[in-house]
Length: 487
Image (cartoon, rainbow, N blue to C red; front, side):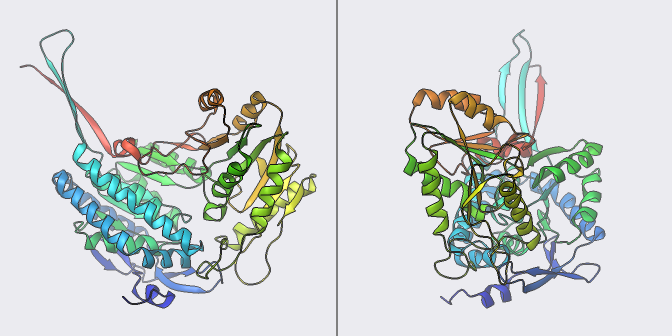
């Protein structure tokens, strides 16, 4: 089998729009560059879709909807299963492509491919388990029937930080439910989605079921699609600010909407925690994906009795990480996605230090090419520091302390966000208390990772609504019809 190299994956990567089963250039005949965040160099040029291209993609999805909805569930399931097998077999190619456009180390990219593929396997099994119910009217006489049918054409906007998995997490249930799609990947990382579209085509997905429009003008191209009366659902993963605007646009057509938005995850370490295990979990919760994840631990709330021990151990681990280009052997931490993102992270660190925080390790941009930032641990972070209220999206761990459980819960919940919270404790009673008290859609107890294809992923408050994954994930793409039947 030929070796997977940067040159080989880029030479075979699709760079055109995928509409109605055909690869085609933008109607404007323009392109935009995809850059390597580790070097700043241009990897390839990709078709720059326009408003007419978006309309054509929606036309294709609408035209394919009726036949796709009528396709047997087993057929839809087998397409997803073939896609899972193909993606699993090509992990190295997809991992290399992802690392080049997004920056994460190859080991993490391989993990994302495995994680992303699992949504295809999970929803291949859910496709044949869509069902309704039958009941006798409690008053007697008639019968009550319910059935599930696909929502219809769906517009999906996916983020740059998990360019494959955030796509499969939406595409998998849509295929299983019988919905057609227009996908708009992030302009920073379009290559993984285009390669995924080619793989699904190979797996037997009919023309028009999946359409991919890449563009550097996201807002301009997306708004007419969202406002089109033929669209029936919008799903978005990204910032809360953008999510608000999209919800406003979706209101015109009263679309079914699911939003996976920003986070400000607390990581609680109680006095009875296994500190070594807590540090292991902290490394996972903080440093997965270079800290560029909505589930990333954003605030470390540590009991005052173990704060020094935890902080010193975390600083040793963070300070020992190797930073560099993700394709190089031995690299633990890749670059941030853009220089603007790096500047934003550095501003948060500087603000905390100016307010009195102490830097135990890191705290600086790394000189040279690429958007690298040193893994950073801050202690003594004051309550007014921006790093405690804003999503960091980088390798920075701010630590504060608490005196008792009630204070920890108050601090954890003192945010407009509610995606995920983490807690380390060996007290089973406390596990139940905090699981019920924490105002988050997901809670990780003695673990630094909560994402799982078999579990419902999503948040509350300003972190959005709707769930992806688990039994719940497919219901986001289904409507319920009630039939009253007189026998």
